[in-house]
Amino acid sequence: MSNVRIGIDLGGTKIEGVAIDASGTPLWRERVATPKNDYAGTINAIGELVERAELVLGVRASIGMGTPGSVSPATGLHRNANSTVLNRQPFVSDVSARLAREVRSSNDANCFALSEAVTGAARGARVVFGVILGTGVGGGVVIDGRALDGHNGIAGEWGHSPMPGSYRDGRDARAGRAESPARPCFCGLVGCREQFLSGPAVERDHAERTGQRLVLADIARKSAAGDSACAATIERLIDGLALSLADVVNLLDPDAIVLGGGVSNIEALYAVLPGRVAQRAFTDSFTTPICRAAHGDSSGVFGAAMLWPSTSGAQSGPQLDPHPEE
Image (tube, rainbow, N blue to C red; front, side, top):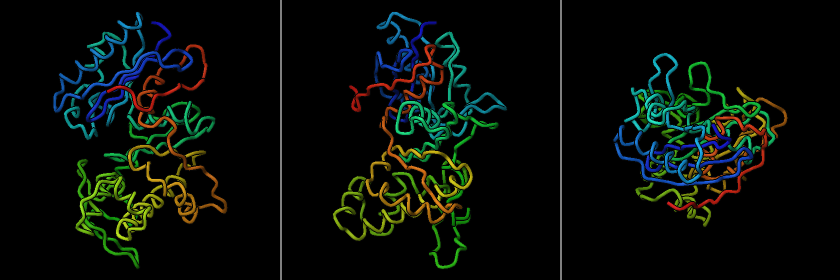
């Protein structure tokens, strides 16, 4: 095997591939559309992406893959993916068979956190909590440059625990707070953080309360311009996010928190969140930085490649094009 590492980031709409050398410098990148609801087609698309990279580079590379969900240690089958076509399938084994080599795999949020911890916004931090706030809500934990999968393969999955103050029957027992709506999640539970903090959840919350159907970027823009209804929506998001991050701080106490995904582009988060989390953290002095991801939507794919160690031990960061050719 060469010193070249290929990372694959499997998303709901796109599959991105990158090849990096031992120092982390990108050598090749490509994105293709994810075959919709097509399990065999998804495996073949990944296989063809890797084959094109190796043909261009003239090498046989190691392969790391970031996926929604994860492999069950009990069954070896994929589970917990919002791309439900993967669930209950031997997905990683099937990709390994297609490529005739071992494929290392981790949850896409773990890969995001790994990239940001090694070469991104949290570079140099020992314990990093990476947060994805996009179509869904995910999290990843990196300790000493290694992604933590956990005993059950679910480390960092804060998106599928109940929203603080929200119970599975939709009632909120905390004095002085309005009753929270019952929000069923694809995972089978009700009241998951994903149903409050993801981009679609924020858009749905705004529509339910105002009757206005706006995309997240417009809600954030109007809020910054002084629209009171949009500002109230962003305030609810910040309040819920602060409650949720305070839980992480009190449990894990990371050296850095990095935010990614579409929701992380809301500028107001970075000015307000640290103070709100500080109010709820069990400490007399909260100094943990809450950072925007340095590598944007490319963090996951670079982190996937980093599931294989660099043979040189080099840690120089990749120079990223934030808008690679589709």
